[in-house]
Length: 117
Image (cartoon, rainbow, N blue to C red; front, top):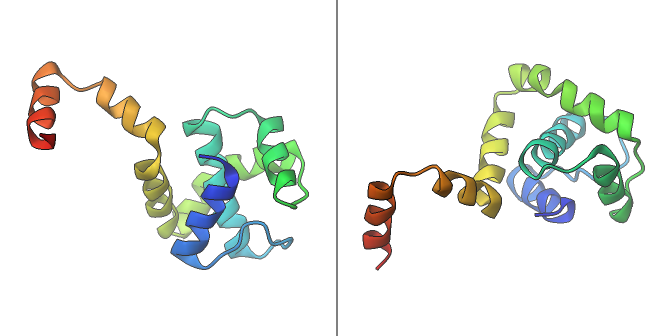
């Protein structure tokens, strides 16, 4: 899942366009969610995240992205919706599903296979 898709999902859930060139609080918070998701879930590097923003017409630096990730805990403390939005992105991520499935016991995998038949 690349940044454009993440941005579309965030916009669909919240009405906030993370590519808008502004420092309004709602935009900063939603970019923070996107940045933490890309960094922690997708394993993207700082420069790679900046390139994704530039592809979508948003100018930023790797330090701004780093700061955004560093301040996510503060943002989520004051805005209780952020962890829910992050969780929604995780649930839509194929990578996260693969990680969860790989930790299941054989019995649970068999039970899931039975349900899917």
